[in-house]
Image (cartoon, rainbow, N blue to C red; front, side, top):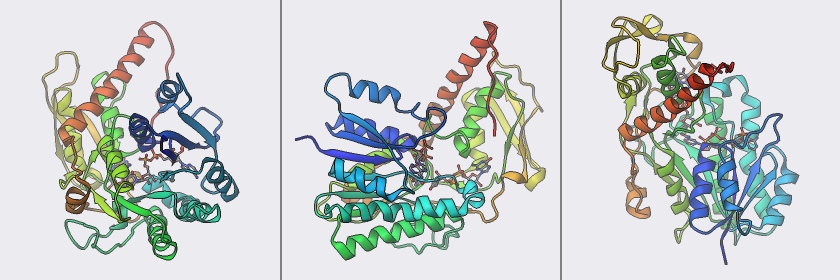
Length: 371
Ligand code: NDP
Ligand code: GDR
């Protein structure tokens, strides 16, 4: 019998990679999608189509983590072997504007899902993965951060996820459920949401190189993140649910990089050398040299600006994970390097940019969204 999985957040970055992975392992995959006025399934349309060419192996259901009766009904109908709770309002900066909704979806939403499993009587059958986060460490006291490092959340998002973390532990201890937290550090890909910093940077690099954008406007350039590839990280999620005992795991690369350095690496991919000058809001990035004759950038040209509107009221300055436990118990390690990741992301955005340029050459009016 094929295993049955339910993925909440299937239309997001990780949902896409996880659905692909589970289908490749023979699972039947059910996904929770939100109703929206415009289609929100762009990331998974191809996967759904391929999965359902013969016998149907992928199913999408309307629902929302703020709607418990819907979750109970779906868990009752699907009776999943595994649930991956990836749905969340996942943007740290936005959570300062929508703190109550974030708490509802990311914190109580996790409870609703666990409670659905319990109410339907599936505590012995269904294994639950909770998408916990390195943001829990927040105001970091210990470097690197592992499963035993104390938490100090620094945003409404992280505080909501703290509740999600502990309610998962509590359902494991109280009801003997196989429920686990993956404490994942930042992971990115060409389908990363456009307002997270890596994708914002790679998209801007492609557009600036193609003369579709003048400058990249960012916030705190000194923040340091442990960035991995989403494809590697969904593999860790799956492994976490295949063990004999339910436990929590840190998933990270063990390398940390400044936002400023990510910018430099991304521009380097298109042959543009960038340097930085100034400090705080007065800092800017400028072109030192451009070795690609396709691009019309000249030395001294300003390509990066800092605007405090992208600063957060409370920031997480430094994240660096220690995934030794996952490496020894799950046999997991990241396959992609940061250099591979930057290359793949810039290539993806260049392709998108070329499409826009080509359409404009044909006389079509194509508008570009921006942050
Ligand atoms: P995305 O923002 O790309 O995807 C989030 C998903 O959740 C989308 O499918 C979104 O739907 C859905 N969603 C949002 N709110 C609700 C809701 N109220 N009810 C149902 N679905 C909802 O996130 P990622 O794929 O990057 O991350 C997956 C999970 O992992 C998230 O929980 C995130 O907080 C967590 N995480 C992510 C890390 C990362 O670096 N990527 C690191 C650590 C943890 P829609 O498409 O309609 O918006
Ligand atoms: P993060 O990711 O907050 O770590 O949360 P994000 O890419 O948003 O920020 C990373 C760092 O970059 C700094 N930064 C900017 N960030 C954004 N978004 N936009 C900017 O213009 C900008 N300029 C500088 C930020 O201040 C921050 O320090 C991500 C999400 O995926 C969470 O859901 C997940 O839990 C954590 O990673 C681990």
